[in-house]
Length: 403
Image (cartoon, rainbow, N blue to C red; front, side, top):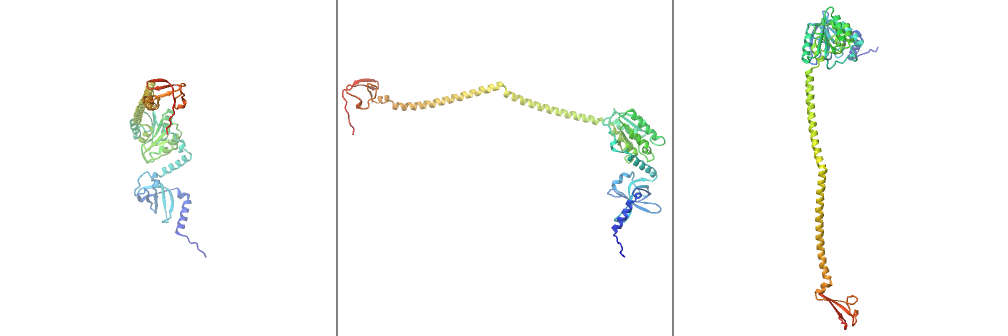
């Protein structure tokens, strides 16, 4: 007979899968006394729950710490909400806590969770229904007790941030019998009055003290309110249904006042900074424009017709001077050339020969006599000498041979 053999890992995984498929074990409330509580440096909390019959190991991971509104200590009676699963490495099961409340608040807390889930499924917490809180308001409506610390905190913060904002208080009951209807009436009254923003809340307290803000009627009044609503219920660790429905949650009433009332001193400082910046930019522009104007003035002076005429006149004078020099140089060169040519001509001139003792003979028809064959006896000849001419008649010609 063949036997099936499983590994430890397979067995633990199988058992874990059985736990995972059990709906009740995934959403379970367990009540007991805290023991072996250790806050790990990683942010996880390890502890056990025990009663007279036994114990169960528990862990709350750092990411779930938002579900813990107090510091756990040994011996506390608590109600833990979470899921039970198997830790495969050790083969042991433990409760993975998602929320932890002190015992005595358990019933109310279950009601809180049930209403939260119901209203969430109806879409009353959806972001698309959240209205934007105005940045600059003139009137702030407040639904809270007239004598509590919440209204004093709101008044102090508001007067410090902007004393010109008007606060309109609807004195409501915030706990006990009649509180729910009082809060609902306050929201509806201030909404009809037409305030710019509304603060609904009270100071901190136990879950019983804050329970009026966990009622469906209050949640619906906030959801249906046309005025943007800031919830300010309790302290930072307190969370109510009103916080989920409101357009914005403030951890404390003081924080709600800071969110609702803009700090006009900040606006004043911002305006001063803008004015100084605008002044600097204007002065910079003026300096730049003045510099540009000086550049234009310099350019205009350079391009002015008078300057152009003066430049042209100077250019003409320069050209005239240059032309004069060129002409003088040319004349000087030509004079020198003429002198040289004149000397050359003098050397070639017949008169120069005459000055040297030579004479020049012409026939009657003004032809130079170079050979005796040009002259016959009796021909009239003209002899040119240095200081005049001599008319003669040829009496004889005689040819001489030079051999």
